[in-house]
Image (cartoon, rainbow, N blue to C red; front, side):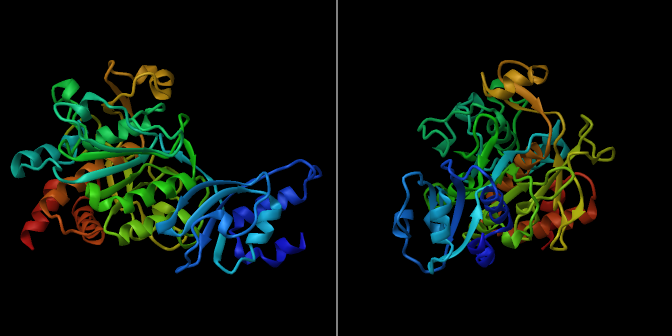
Length: 405
């Protein structure tokens, strides 16, 4: 236990507690590993775990995110004890679990008005949805295929799929064109391209390492696909200051690379990723099935709170209650939430995940009109719109503010 206490400052609190519990366990003779995120110091050329130290037979490497200076692995206590003193390592983190946040929308935010008035569809903008995957639904593939990329950090498959259904629904809110419903269930940016990045399994669960690997992929391929938006309708259950969260550090690098990062603000808490000042945090509001905003109210899925770092979140509110969007057939959600299945092509879901998908579509429309806009500029405009209208975000108001400048 002495080495653990001595090097406590080189680990986050989650890893320290996990190792403490294991060292106190009476069954230490049973081989055990801990899933660890390794943050390398800036400027290091090391890219593989085996370059850091000798490995034991039970150690195994997981995902690497070289642009973000992160490695991940399942490690024995012996190897962790070696790594915690390594001069090339900045800090070790527990590779915690992350989960999907599932807890008339286009008209409510003025999407139809903006499309008709300005002719915007999100064309030329690519949205990367880091989630449970994406099903090649007609709303994405017809009349032309707008799924321009897919990467799978769960099973390593090459063709798009979604065994949970969450990622498909979120993608549809952002960029579905309503092909299977004659336009009735179209998302906001029906002309945007989509990249499905599967970082969560069929149950909507994953690890920090898979999400960080997904963010690393987006930064690496930003220019290739013109990735302007990352949609993160996921998060961790634990709340820590954002400065000490490895997922936040990765998302911050994406923002610095010129990608706008949108994060769902979970109901009762604002998780560490959503609390970052450079990340646009989205809350859910009900539109009560009407286009008017006068009867909208903040829904139970969203909390408007002051974070540990003194910020008020979420930054913006979008419809997130009973939103109909593409269904991934034979997925977990299609089977477990059968009462919400509209037909063989669509399902109605609620939550801040859904609101975040709609926000991604709105941002795509803004970026089509004003390609140079940064995350900071868009967040400022959204804040100004919220001062005018405390309830649901309104695209027409944002464009009116922009045109006045």
